[in-house]
Length: 448
Image (cartoon, rainbow, N blue to C red):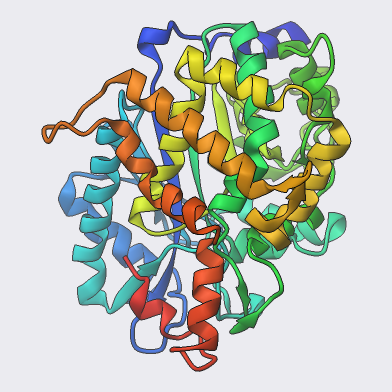
């Protein structure tokens, strides 16, 4: 790759006809040892690598990495377009295959969790879906032996105070969605960026830090505000006239690099410029120009609320239990994959000012659905967005063998919106009530 045009081509070749749009769902979860609730290490009879090796019995192919001075290790799995991988502290992630409807998505998540439980229980391990590790300190979290994480671990404290917490103590659920062309990408990007705070509020589930309430409902979302300003945030330019693929490429070129991966090793290029790499002047790798894979890798090191690769990634939600793994893709598919719903969602947000969008982004982590907005609250926005999404899902008319359409997966969100309360607030009620000021019951009552 030698020019900006080559980079632009990478993004723009991801477009698909509407009949081919797929749904790719990702979710992360915290592992814990059932006897002492501590996060499992990578090594050992009850470690994360043992879990990965155990999952091979279900047809997963192991993916290995060989770091200098260490034996080859199993650090991920792949099967039929899906993968199981590890976040820095061993948070287990399923990156689902591209699927056609939400019934398939929910079956995929169900199958994965059943397989994980079958392997984890004999090892004395359990898994929990929340936005932030509720009990353990940063120092208590293990680190996985992946080369890119070593580079990021050393770089993060240089650019923010919470980046290491983002790496080791957060978990999320995301959905990746297709676009038809550049105009469709722009409209979906603007709608999803404007409503990302609504998703954050509905999924808010990270109210504890080191065993105590932290004053937030989505502490995971707050962490991103002090991780790395060069690669996080709302991306105001998405709402400017003329936004398109070219402007996003320019943004990515201004995001500092982390690494170059060559011949099985990670070369530390943290803080250096991809623009220099294009011209063969990268200090960490002089005289060399990037491959397509390098640009693809670099595009994953930007962390805005919505991320563009060859598709759009919705990044605003805390992880949660099984039904919210299904609810997150349902919310966004209903809004973005039906033309009438997308128009209605755009009408809902089109006059939001940049100042209002930032007020939502800054206020939702602490106040969630109760954050005031335009004479009402985020709850009013959430109810309207859910209504639009539900109608969009019904029009898609994908029914399961029981005759239920995809809107059934919005039910947990509808319940929270009806009650005007978040998952975090329900857990806080339990903490101050039945749990007697302890977070330990979380690991029993909310484990998968």
